[in-house]
Every structure is written in structure tokens, then in C-alpha cells.
Length: 278
Ligand SMILES: NC(=O)c1ccc[n+]([C@@H]2O[C@H](COP(=O)([O-])OP(=O)(O)OC[C@H]3O[C@@H](n4cnc5c(N)ncnc54)[C@H](OP(=O)(O)O)[C@@H]3O)[C@@H](O)[C@H]2O)c1
Image (cartoon, rainbow, N blue to C red; front, top):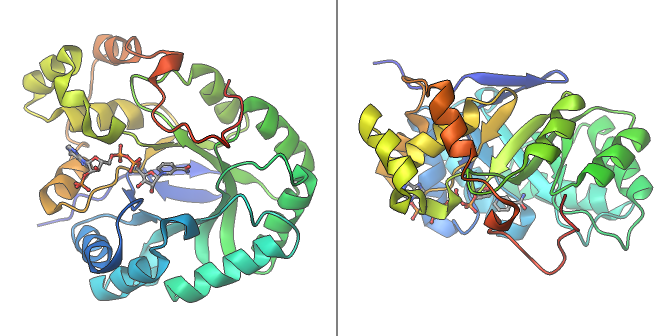
């Protein structure tokens, strides 16, 4: 039986599997087991961060899976208090040591920090790439203004902006700018942390295709050009079903009906250090 690999999404030389495994709140043995299970069952993209305090556990899961490192797209990030020159590079070195790898595929600035000049952070991020710590670099939680500034400053391409996105959150403005720069829009909290089963417009479409509400929402996500989603689960059946979304296609009317659920109020992730969103 062939594994249900996700198709690759391309940007600036990076090829990222359209579905990745999120790992926020997955820790210890449960995290290692989830990562290993996911990789053994077709996932080829894993998302972690120092902030999740699980890089060692993710590394253990990578090794336990037996899947060659070269087949896995691995992302980590730099927390917003380590974005200065030297600090950022040391954060990346710490991540490589904890993960037990020589290089990550993608290194992201996790959140912008207005206290540290973006010029300094972007130069350090470029340096981390040149040192070979990361094959590709990118950003997360960047607004349109941050993106314009970051692209003015960077020497190396920024391959993605990882931001919250699901049908209840309208991200049209930011997505248009991300795509204008040829970047991938990586959606975090892409299944709204599991709430969509209670939304009638979603359940009706789910019933038609014999899929779950989360599968419909993930399909909506990756059916947009240049989109990748990283649903988190440590539950085997959910991990399998979140990847099993490539055997059907939503109609234009269904895509539009799901998009119409979106508003600026639909945001779930609202830390007090967040930027002024678009
Ligand atoms: N860059 C950033 O600032 C940022 C912020 C937030 C998240 N992220 C990344 O994005 C990933 C995903 O976001 P998220 O964890 O916030 O939310 P999410 O993926 O939308 O939802 C995860 C939650 O939904 C449950 N779930 C998973 N699959 C399900 C399914 N098929 N049906 C019903 N429930 C399901 C999970 O439970 P179980 O695990 O118990 O199955 C978990 O409680 C994170 O793990 C992290 O890697 C990045």
C-alpha cells in the first residue's frame, strides 16, 4: 500500500509538503511517539519551535521513525527574545543540538519584536542560513508592514510567513501580499483547534464527501495556491485523517461558502506581544 504523501508546495527553491505535523503542546514521550507515528504513516513535514520545549522529543521521534532525514522537511523557529545579532545564531545552534540534526530545512522568526531592529534580526537570520544552520529561512506572525520591511532588508529569500488561518479568520489582505512576494502562506491553528464540527456550513459539506469537518477545513486551506497547513495532533486516527484530504476537491461554490465564514474577529491566538494585525 502506498503512503498518502502530501503534495509539495514550492517557493524560492523550497519544496514544502502541503500538510505538516504541528507540535505545540506535544511534549516528552507522547511527542516522540506522535512524530514517529506521523512519519511512518506518510507525513514528511514537522513543525517545532524552542518555545514548545519539545525539540529533543521531536528529534527522538525523527530517529525512531526510521525515515531518512533527507526525506523530512523540518521547521524550527527563534523566539522573539533571541532575535539580536549572535543570540539568533545561538538559538539556531541550540535547536540543532536538541533536535540532533546538522541543519533544519526552515528557520523562522517566531514573532516580530519591536524592541530589536528588524535589520539586525534579518541580517542574523541570513547569517544563520549562510552558516548552513538552515536550508531556507522565513518568518511567522509578520504583518504586511513587517513583510515589506523584511524583503527590503534581506539578501536571501524568505520562503514563508507562518500565520493563523482557518475559515473563521479573514486573512485575504495578508495572503495577497505573501503571494505577491512568491512566498508560501503556512497556516497555523488550521483546524481552529477542532471547533469546526459544530459549524453547520462545514458539517453539511463534510457529509456530502463522507469526510470530517477538520478534513473539509484542511482541504479548503491547501486548495488555495501556495498554501500549507500544519494541524497538530498526538492522536493516531486524527493524524491519519488530517493527511487524508487529497482524494477529493471542493467546488468553487463550497470554497466560497467556507471563505464567507471569515471575519477579523475569528482570531484564536492573541498574545499580548502580538503586532497590530492587518
Ligand atoms: N507560529 C506561531 O506563532 C504558531 C502559533 C500556533 C501554532 N503554531 C503551529 O501550528 C500548529 C497547529 O496549530 P494549533 O496546535 O494551535 O491548532 P490546530 O492544529 O488547529 O488544533 C490542534 C488541536 O485540535 C485537535 N485535533 C487535531 N486533529 C483533530 C481532528 N481531526 N479533529 C478534532 N480535533 C483535532 C488536537 O488534539 P489532539 O492532539 O489531542 O489530537 C489539538 O487539541 C501548532 O502545533 C504549531 O506547530 C504556530
